[in-house]
Length: 362
Image (tube, rainbow, N blue to C red; front, side, top):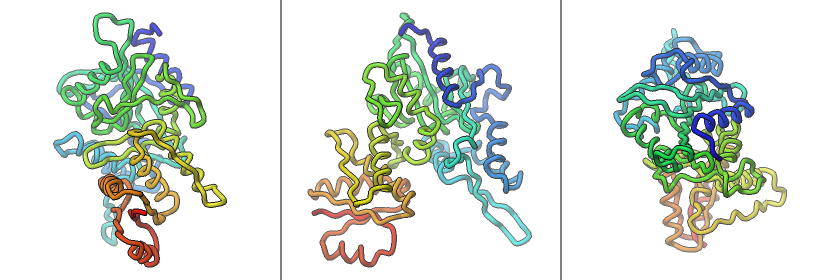
């Protein structure tokens, strides 16, 4: 409990090495300090993930990843997040014309086909020179940033919120280009740890209290389940590929109870024999609307675009849920529909061959 920041870094790094991450100190990486991407790692990874594509196609994909040029951090992050999910579209010129190829950035199906690298004290020079405590690179891309404060330092605020404020200063003032690529931010004092996204206020950062789906929640030391749970390689890829979403300009990361609850609901949906999945119970204010969206988004992928009917018992709740789903249409790959009567619902279901998210009241 009395770790200084260096010891905290080493404890986290050692745990992550045991979980299959490679480690390299930032000062040992030869590079241009103005680059936030590990370009040789990125090039090697893209070539490995896309063995059938031409070298110039890989180079063009790297150029697009490196040169996010919308003079707005959120817009750049949205564009890159889309690349993470859908790949980078690159034209290949052939004797028969133009053929568009998709360059994959991550292999979500084979975890060991990706490079997971944890780096500490990685110097970045942009508007000033800064060194975030820990950065997690996947295939050369800086997708997670961890900032630590130590309770042994009496001369400054050492709370997790102070670590968040430092991340915020990096993002807004000093090294904003690092956050074009960021998917998860973590702030910790060595005991408590909270995770969020680049658009979250501190109040929206949350603990990750369980390392595994069947574990008992940990209410005191939440750094340890954060490292062994959220930063477990399989969980991290699953979150990046299937759960983190944009609702307009707000980037949403599920809380641990939403993630594990949806995972159980998805498994039950795919394996139940009698058609009954179960009850997903929430307390007030615990994010049931987004749990529904995460569940729907995952089922749309797994069941190849099924028809989903959302039934509520109040008009105001129906309107509220519909608006929430509509703002997440990019994640859901479609816009929801409203029906106002039994007849309209029956007509929609009888005439719809596949897909659709339909809202109705009892």
